[in-house]
Image 1 (cartoon, rainbow, N blue to C red):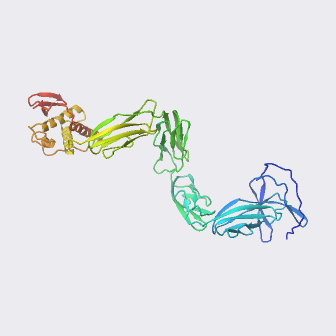
Image 2: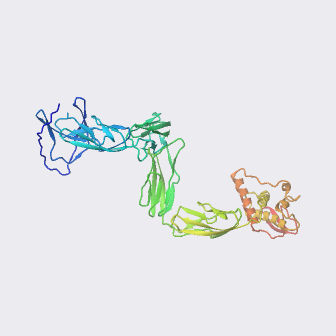
Image 3: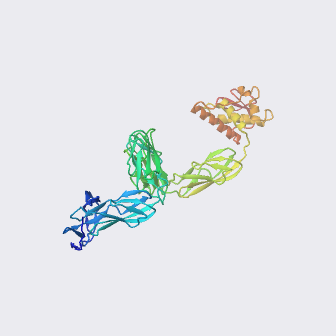
Amino acid sequence: MIKKTKKITFAVCCAVLCAIIAVSTIYASAASDNKLTVVTDELENYDGIAATTPTYEVSGVNYTGVVKISRATLTLGVGEDFTLSAGITQTNNANQTVTWSSSSKSVATVDTNGKVYAVKPGTTVITASLANGSKSECTVTVKKAPTKLSLNKTSLTLGIGEQYDLNSSLKSDEGAYSIVYSSNNSSVASVKAAGGFVTAKKVGTATITATTYNGKKVTCKVTVKKAPTKVSLNKTSLTLGIGEQYDLNSSLKSGEGAYSIVYSSDNSSVASVKAAGGLVTANKVGTATITATAYNGKKVTCKVTVKKAPTKVSLNKTSLNLTLGEQFDLNSSLKSGEAARSIVYTSNNSAVASVKAAGGLVTANKEGTATITATAYNGVKVTCKVTVSARSYTDDDLYCLAAVIWQESGSYWLSDRCQLMVGNVVLNRVASSRFPNTIRGCLQSPGQYGPMAWNISIPSGSNSIEKKAIERCFKNAKKLLEGHRELPSNVVFQANFPQGSGTYAYEGGLYFCYL
């Protein structure tokens, strides 16, 4: 048994300012017989040296020692326990008893071995003491027991060999020091029990579970794919204006996976990039190379050219007349030396004329007027006034006229002029009192346009060449229906031989003749 004495010996030390002593500490836990089990370990450095080293006497021998708890703060949930350890330094006898106490036992208790038990929400100070008066404290905060546990990922795709740190969180007023992670398929994806560090091992799926001391848990499904063999970007070259941003997106081959793709720039003063995500920012005129690198070293680059910010935006049309259902592609342009990848188009009256935000394709929806605005990323803009009028023709008119153009001059080697002349003959007939007053009626007149007398049709196109040829027929038919003319109004015959009162023109192997 240790007998305390009133005799205290002071070992006077020189005053030392801001000294750091790296010591090999001695962790001790009290046994039932008051003897200490000693384990040596490296503890943190101590700032400063006490002017005196506390001592106490046992059987005429003075013992020195300074106690230090392994942590200064601790957060627990109600019902949770945690064992604190204490180290003794500056001692000539490690076999000293550490006495533990709590300043508020209603919040947390502590036993003779430093085991803390959380009782109710609040704060208490756990103190470790030596017989010579040396003390060390740990502030323990007790919160409510967890009711729900969350993870930063509930699903995750990794490539073989990739690692990811799963982080858990609780409600602000709840606490838990102990959260244990486990995997139901460690051969696919293993996890560190303490901390949640996941390692992808082979192709497959695994479920990682995080569990609190009171049994609350949450899971994350981990899908492991092959390691990347190639990384691709949505852009391999890019031109931006100063101040503009663009989001580079990476992709991998099917069956390959990588959570971590890190982006970097070789010239951040020209174009910088977010390491996670690939958001590029243009900073000054010049060029830079952005590199996207997977966790296993596979990479791809994008050359970024930065020009001056726009001072003026121009459009190919500042006013536009369309008929119902018609479309027109507004194209923007900038001054030489200026750039803007992002030009956004808007309409102040989409019911009349709508526009694709990216690209400027205008669609006429109903009669009226609308203003289309093209705006660069820095606010510079230009407008186009769109007037929409009713169509003077029906969908059937368009189909029939395109069909006769296709039948009579649809070959891709025949000129647009030839197609327009063929269609113009039909419109001249409609306008003449000598023929039916509809396009369909003229085409179905016996002996005029062959099989069209009983079947007016146009194919959908069996290949790209035929599809483009058919599109041209519709385009020229529409042009005629909207007022374009190639022939005088009295040219009403078209055939591969002369007829009528005389020939007006010969085009594409066809004679176009007067009434």
